Structure formats: structure tokens, C-alpha cells
Amino acid sequence: MRTIAGLGAALALLAALAATTSPTPARAQEASVAVTAIVEHPSLDAVRDGIRDELAENGYVPGENLDFLFQTAQGNAATAVQIARRYVGEAPDVIVPISTPSAQAVVAATDTIPVVFSAVTDPLAAELVTDLDNPGGNVTGVSDLTPIEDHMALIREVLPDAQTLGMPYNPGEANAVAALEIVRDIAPRFGFEVIEAAAPNTGAVQSAAQSLVGRADAVYVSTDNTIVSAIEAVVSVGRENDLPIFTADTDSVRRGSIASIGFDYYDVGRRTGELVLQVLGGESPGNIPVAFAQGTNLVVNPAAAEAMGVTLPEAVIGRATEVVEE
Image 1 (tube, one colour):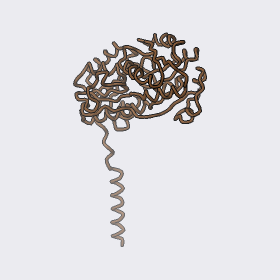
Image 2: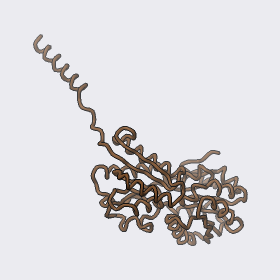
Image 3: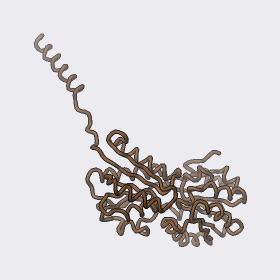
Image 4: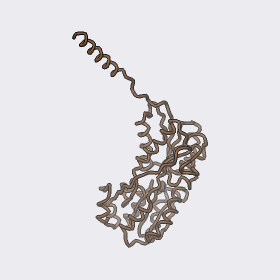
């Protein structure tokens, strides 16, 4: 009995030692990821944070085994080109441009370093890839094409008598032009005439919005980075003139627009991070299909609506996934 008991104790001791000395999960290898964005605003910042967190949760920890670089062009296309060239010279494992202008700058700068773009409205129109399912070459990424038809339906539900829809946009941003073309095509089906207002830089955003006063019954802002980065100026015009402001990105509702249907840009970043992980794991970007952001969150801001002379229907508030309280 003592022999059996002794054997049992020995086995238990060996098991305990094995448990305490078993190897920890292997850390990811050293890597470098260079991220850039055309401008800083909440949506694009959320994409960056989502990318970083997705990498960290999968073993690539900034400051430990991951060199995670980030630079913004501050809304300047020439600066975006300079950043792209600088990154190419530094030769990171992956370059991640956030937004169409930054993606165009990076793709023009290299055909060898893997590129995973994010928050690009129309990768085909921007000439980043020629095939969404089989991108080929060194490029893939995530599109943030928003549900514009749903936006038009929402505006019509809130404003049943509206006839004209103003749209400020930057004619120098390919994503802004692509969104405008889609709105031009879809809006008439909902009874809207589209009135454009060009804003080639952030300094021109307020005057572009002001030019729509008296000409438009409502304003729609797409995921145009120039306009979104200065959305407060558009909102100010809306409040001062009872001009309802609707946006394509939900973050702008928290900044004062009336409502939007869309997705969480942090989730867009996490999805982008998944593609980056595939590339770091050895997959060629050209073999990874372009992904599209998913989500149908309805975010509403009743106080902003009231400030612009609009009362949101209870049906709209009732089905919202988030009601912003000011």
C-alpha cells in the first residue's frame, strides 16, 4: 500500500512540475507595420486603434515585438505622398494607408511592399486594385462603402416633404467623387434633387455649407475626409439656419449631425488588422480578396435634430441602436 501511495504521490508531483514548466504560447515574430492616414478625425482614428488592437491580441505587441508607426498627412495630399515615400524607404513588413488619398499615395510609391488599405470607399474607382476578388500584385484591403441607399431612405423618412439635398464634397478626393456619383444615381429614386457644393480643403467647408442655405432642404455628408474632419462647421451652419444635417458615418452623429446608418470604424480597423495578420503570416496581399465593412447601426441625435428645426419620428428613435444624449 505504501508503494502504491508513494507512486501516486510521485506521479502527482511530476504532473505539478509539468504544469508549472509547460511552455507558454509562442509569441509572434518581430514585425514592423507602418500606418498612415490623410487626416485625423474620430472615424479614421478608430480604424488605426482597431488595427493596433487586433495585432496586439494576436501576439504583435507595439513596443515589444512590433514596430507600429503612424503618421498623418494633416489633410495635405502632397504630405501624404511624402509619407508614402518615407515609409517605402524604411521598408516595413506592411504599409497600411487609411483613407483613399493615403492609399493612392502608397500604392503609387511601391509595387513590392505589401499594402493593406482601409476605409477606402471605392477601391476600383481609386485604381488601387483591378479586381476585388483577386486583387493581384501587392495590394488588398477593406472598403468602407456605406449603405447610401439606406441613408436616402432615412432622410426621406425624417423629412417627407424635402425636395433638395445639398452635398458638400472635396472634388480632389476620389472617394468623395465616387460617393457623389452614387448619390446622384440613387437620390432621384427617393425624390431628391442633388445640389453640390465644392470644398477643396477644410478651410472651405463652412462656406460650402453656407452656400447651401436657402437652396437645399437638407444636407448629406458622405465619408469625405475633408468634410468629416470639419463636420462641426457644417453642423454650426445647420443649427444657425434650421438646415438638417445627415451624415454617412455614425461618429459624426456624436459630433452633432442628426442621424446615420453605418458601422463602427473600430470594427473596420479590426477587420483590417485581420488582413494584416494574414500578410504577416506569409500570405500574398494579391491573393486576399478585398473585404467590405459590415454593420447596420442606426445612430440618432434627437437634440441635434431639434436644434436644426426637426423632430425625429418616434419610429426612428425606437429602432436606433444608439441615441446620442447632448
